[in-house]
Image 1 (cartoon, rainbow, N blue to C red):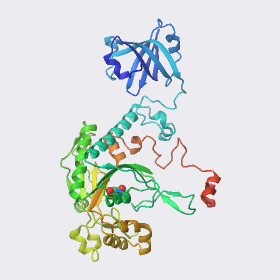
Image 2: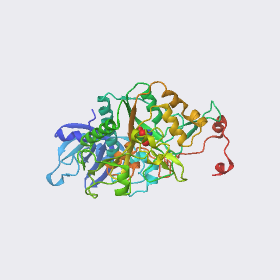
Image 3: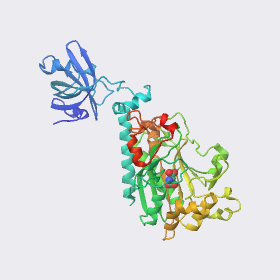
Image 4: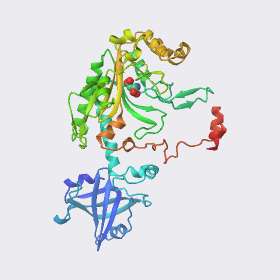
Length: 465
Ligand code: ASP
């Protein structure tokens, strides 16, 4: 029966069977050594000429061949021990070798951290790139983080609900990805920029505590740590005030760090809170970095920015929602909505970590009159409000509870926990910085018959590209 390489440390003198990849081969005089890699780690295997059948086979092995090895676990001679690997005090003295599959020479080395290799090539052969231990570690950490979040929230009566990917445009401030409808020519679904409307509608539906490991899609121009699709821990709660959302999120993050990244230390608990105004005045940014030692890779400085303004001006000077149009004006400032709207604060908050915005959230409007007023202030005509958000306004007429939530970004959290320079290192199959997948060759042209079926005719300029 197959065991993992890391398990051999308890099995000195025993006969074992291992399966995995050849991470490297060295011939030393009469001996052939291979490093055998599996999901648990690496172990050294030695083939002696006395292993009549296995020995000549072992001489043919190349990097990344897939093999089954049978042999005996032996202690290495004192001066041959390797403390850099878990199995370093031992080796397998092979008696039998079976090649399960051969492999081409990989286009790049897999036994380094890979940071120096051209990213385009790494992404083209991502299935090989992911074999390196750094990326295996990142994916495992990602799994642990999500697993922890699921358990933490489930233990507190949150229900995980999947919301549609084919939906309708949600105003989160970015461009939508559109999906043409074949059945309704000329009509389009939009991929969700976040499940914002659905999670609020789940509160109207009486769920009270919702979460989702949610994929969000935003068609933005490329930026270092942005991806066209990314993952949030999306959550929403009913009958809460801002303090409830903040303290739940804070407890989750503190316990999460303790469980999955105990080597990290948090600069200050409880997380410091700063109003947006104070952050801008004192630090000239709404993402201040409060780390005590910026060279310390294990320091995590979480903080809350609160009291954001409800509105801000966009590049053209037009009034826009600072977070999104569903955030609730602070009742203390509501009287200024008509007279001094830019002075109105909202019940909106950001969680900031080491100068990154980790996530945003807010207490929401749950009253259709107020929601309509905000849409109008943002310059939407009644016709547009009705067409785009009629369902929300209607839902708020049916007993919408007070509610609010938050959505911390998971990719960014893993990036910081694993000390990676960008979120692509934390995603199994990311896009390049300019939005391509070099492995699948996406985006790609499609068959003209598919376009015809959708009733789509490409403009000449796009066709020629
Ligand atoms: N949907 C918001 C976002 O993606 C988060 C929230 O308000 O809960 O930023």
